[in-house]
Length: 102
Ligand SMILES: [Zn+2]
Image 1 (cartoon, rainbow, N blue to C red):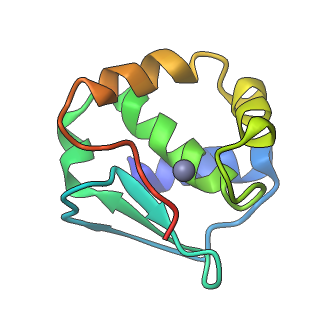
Image 2: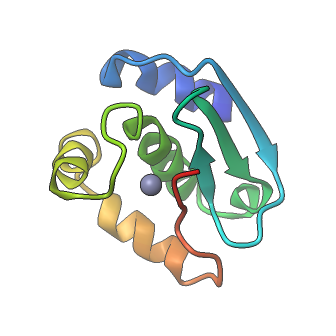
């Protein structure tokens, strides 16, 4: 699932994901290390709607293009995934926070 999503979005965002893993996280759905490009996905995402998983994949990959969650980040998300807000809201119904840059 995640490898397919990464392969789908790499050419769209014109980035490549050098390394990713799944782990248990208490407060984040995903995180991305700016220096190494290493992305972590929360194991709990497996229980969520596939669209929510795709949102986190795109969100973390968009951090390759923009580090912060500012206006530029929002514009990129609007372009790549116009329905990202509803996917985010679905995730936020759960107790975990969205994510944080590592
Ligand atoms: Zn983020």
